Amino acid sequence: MILVVGGAGYIGSHLVKELVEKQEVVVLDNLSTGFKDSVDSRAVFILGDLGDEEDLEAVFSAYPIKAVMHFAANSLVGESVKDPLKYYQNNVAATLTLLKVMLKYNVKNFIFSSTAATYGIPSVDIIEENTPTNPINPYGESKLMVERILENFSSAYGLNYVVLRYFNAAGAHVSGKIGEKHDPETHLIPIILQHLLGQRDQISVFGDDYDTPDGTCIRDYIHVTDLAEAHILALTSLLDGKNKTATYNLGNGQGYSVKEVIDMCEKVTGKNANVVISERRPGDPARLVASSERINKELGWKARRNLKEIIKTAWEFHKHN
Ligand code: UDP
Image (tube, rainbow, N blue to C red; front, side):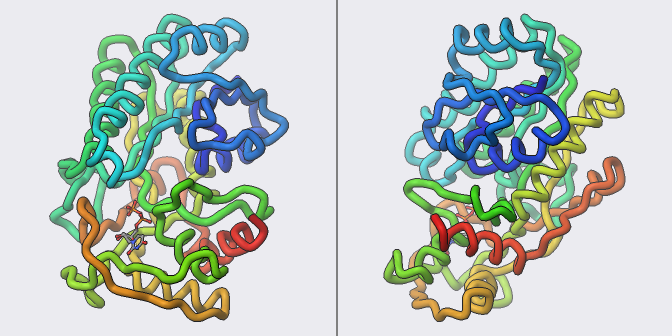
């Protein structure tokens, strides 16, 4: 059985939908940001907190867990700058509790959701896994801390792990039933689509004076189902002993500026956006684009869905939710 912590959240729920086809799955989630009805009904759902040893003990003693996939983190850069305690508590301290209980039950396979924010402001155009990490916000720091903890736990306790550094997760499940819904919403694509549905007056572009061709920030948007597929390959690589420790970027390898994303949303939806330029948002690097060559070579993964498909699936989801 595979334990998915945070399986009711945006990325976790998409992973669970794919994983239940192959494995028995138990989801632990405190529903702080996730939704129970996003969890595939074939998975066992347990309401609980990964920072709570008793909740964890209850799961590990009841189910024969052979691997843990950890999606339960806070993930907003701006919020992490304002409230770093929350980020170190929930993303680092709670993860330590999870690892402690895993080791107690001799569960030694771990898949960890990390982030492009570990790189900070990269000095290269295309980021590889050995590009130096230097986070510029507590969110990125909290994820990098866990990565270091995993290295140490691997040496000391024989923990096997795969770290997956996501770039900009976006899009929705092809069924249109699950997708990105945060409250409050801060992510670019859902904000644009909400505006195009008449739920917001305008879109604010956070800065158009960056050192990029059109002056707006460039990001590497990756479809959430592509992410889910990468997790399954990573899990298989641990379970069949191919990987003991690995770190992979997950991106499309292609960057799109904020303006280009808005243009594509207009094209897909056939609607016009009301765009205003506002101040830069603190903590935003100008450009974050991944090389995913390593996971392509080692596990055969490749992003299969482009920006248009990301926006099409997100649009289907937003229209009905
Ligand atoms: N962005 C923007 N307006 C918004 C939300 C986001 O201009 O209302 C920009 C943001 O500054 C960044 C890009 O869109 O350059 C992607 O931001 P998002 O919050 O979606 O993801 P992040 O890159 O922070 O993980």
